[in-house]
Image: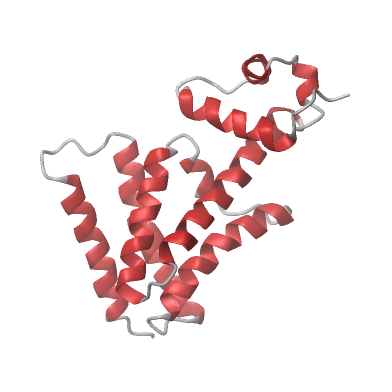
Length: 189
């Protein structure tokens, strides 16, 4: 019988916390079980081993990022929505640096749940881009541009690659302004 109060969500949430608290350490079931006050075999009632735990953390991270982006865009359109989305994206990645890399992977084509949570974030971006009348292939291309700029900046920033003395906030704002300008002047081919 599972320990009272221990659920799959609680196990995955604690795994995510451990991952963020000790990103340099390999996440193990033993460490997770110890932090929950249970033995390793008890975890198998909630996750399918370490791969199942990592999958659960990834799904949770993708869903949380999508919800964060959606909330940031409520009541906003076009440039304001892009800037708000970009700010929320960067903030989420900086607050969750160990989970962030899990959010950038394309969904597993054989995993319906991964497809669903991954699509949620893409749909937020598509709704924002619709304000620029970017649909279909134009929306895909524009999404790739937006994602490339945001992910590139955030991944370099969170890995400590920006050591020059120039203000990071200004640099990020200029990168986002460049994307906004590109979207405003998008020409379909």
